Image (cartoon, rainbow, N blue to C red; front, side, top):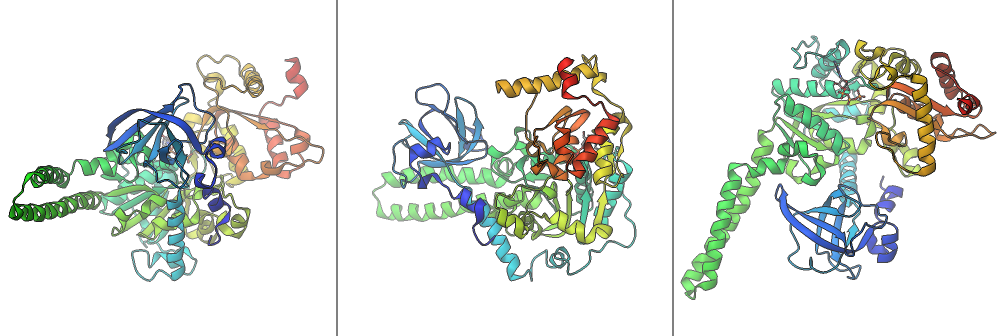
Length: 566
Ligand SMILES: Nc1ncnc2c1ncn2[C@@H]1O[C@H](COP(=O)(O)OP(=O)(O)OP(=O)(O)O)[C@@H](O)[C@H]1O
């Protein structure tokens, strides 16, 4: 990680180094924009709406929600300071909305260009954390935890079994056992949640129980969406939760939990607002007065008031954070200055098997104990540098700890609430030692039980036909989504069609052979899973061969010839 690596190089490919036209071609800059609207509203931020100057739609580009962007005059030199920076809030074909802290005072009425900025803050935070770890953690809340996570000390648990009254009455036995283990953990516990087993449900119970016993909890995940998911459910349990992060990156349904929203409501904020009004009045008095003594007095007062305003604003943030039972943030977001002096009894990381180990450390250094929830038998985070991956960045902390401490520290959830048991059994037998069961509500559900579906075979044929047609016409049909497996992790659909497009005489199966990828692909399906493949090619790989024969045995097998004549 100390060499910059491919990811850093990619991020550093800033538009500043490219000609603006080249940058526009690469989708990192949009030229000739006009600002058509500026409204305040998003928790004190201003939303600017930008459209192509000549109307119509934007050329192809790479701007997406949450990107950090700079606005400049359309033809400004690359080195010219930006009119302002903001975060992309919404992207449509013909308009992009950007949330800004401070609206540029001038320049918005002229043609503009928008540049995508490399998110260097994240890299700096990862690097700073690694440097701190490298120096050795001799003080702070995680002093006792660090040796356990590096394999120098075994994890320990309370001697007496923990009993608790679940908030969620529906928790199954394996979820209850996992929660009890988490509550008993003195340093680390791994909550292993295979597909559809309600890992987040168990995590929310752990956090709620911890709050009940007086703990302050840091709840994290690598992605904003996973953090918002936790926040939504914790709010339902009436837990006092504060969501860190830029409001433009949060789902609208969790905005009320945002730090900014709660700070706006704080007493110290209304005092700061009053002080600001007073400052305005005194400033205009100062401009009018000719009296030297009065000028001196007013200047002194203004200085004092400015200090007071700042103090009240800072105190409002400190109070909200202090008063919260749970602070929720992304892993890298946990390194904010605002949490610098806050430590936690417990750090919970959801989707830990999809997070880089160094990102986990940002959060872990803030807590005495930790619970990591995830499934290392699904796909790990993407690492763009092959070298970094080979040197260990591709192994997650969850996987590493499970390899060291599975017997002591891991509790696996064993009841799943998504798949028909035939779909589930392949994954359970191949990857989870045959330990997973299907809840009765899903065990037998099939596509043909759904309203409007009459014949399952016909539906399969339609699905496959549809897929071909969409590929050919490159168009999206409502209710059908096309995605790579990697992009679909964490999601589910009633029916999944897996296209294993490889077909060659050498039997090269490439990335299909990653068991975790196939595990993710198959386990997205609730009621129906169809695989389209060249069985000769994929049959050269033992794992895929077993998979195809499982489908042959337990499902329906049709050759291409049979489909063509169907
Ligand atoms: N004990 C339970 N009883 C009934 N339904 C449950 C139970 N636990 C989880 N579920 C349901 O299972 C689904 C998945 O649960 P949840 O959202 O907690 O899992 P996840 O962590 O997001 O996904 P996954 O388990 O695939 O990792 C949800 O619809 C949830 O309501």
